[in-house]
Amino acid sequence: MGKIKIGIIGGTGLSDPDILKEGKEKQVSTPFGEPSDALVVGKISGVECVLLARHGKKHTVMPTNINYRANIWALKEEGCTHVVVTTACGSLREEYKPGDLVFPDQFIDRTTKRVSTFYDGKEGSPAGICHMPMHEPYCRHVREILGEVAKELNVSHHSSGTNVVVEGPRFSSKAESKMFQMWGGDIINMTAVPEVVLANEAGLCYAAIAMVTDYDCWRDDHEPVSVESVMAIFKSNVENVKKLLLAVIPRIAAKEWDDIIEQRQAATTSNTMQHGT
Ligand code: ADE
Image 1 (cartoon, rainbow, N blue to C red):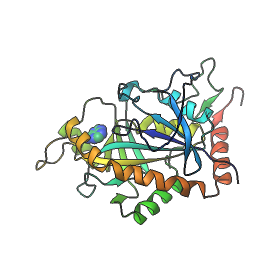
Image 2: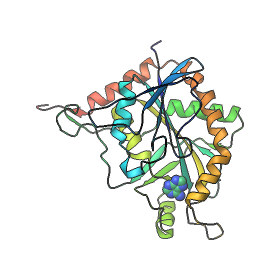
Image 3: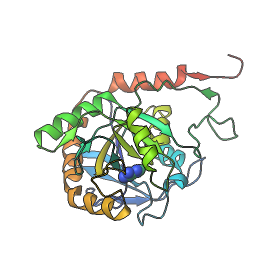
Image 4: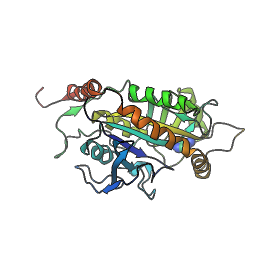
């Protein structure tokens, strides 16, 4: 069984997770620039892990300005085979309640200002043009483990969901929120794309733990989303996210991944057109 290493990208409310005891900070640079902050390398339950705060440890990087390419590249360079991320999200469905955890399986991309490929034809970037299939953006195997463990821990969760990803930094208008519902969106956030897309290009098994913090603004009987409500709900439920992460890591490590990882890497190669081919 090959060695696995798990990258953990902590989102809003989990920027400086203390789950990695005695982690060592490691400042790295990539062909795409600097990641959001220093990596923190160490072990959780004996499994090698690398932590990265998506918005920086002091939460200074807004969604549009996150260097998603540098973040994913840095984790790949560090030897990660898996990436498990946390994020706050709004809910577009009554049954996805504030405090619930969601393991999304699909996204709808409404971002407009982000580079979503490593294969940009520039010097120093990987060669070729990559057209990654995106019918199943999130790793089904990691999602399955997340669902099993959440059930065992009795944490209120949804084992699938379509995540609408908006550019931000503003929240949506009521008309947009209702349109996203009609499109089939279940949850909404500002960071899933291009993070998940780049993880696919990098051949990483990627899954997300999204915590519902609000009902966005489509409900007439609820206060519309605000930073205050997002932070309050996240804070009061963050222990569930930490508990789940800690329990999931050894379970990921116990699975045989060699064939899955090989298939992922082969998918990147076979979907990258090289000059003259
Ligand atoms: N993150 C948390 N809640 C959100 C919302 N309603 N819209 C976009 N991103 C969010």
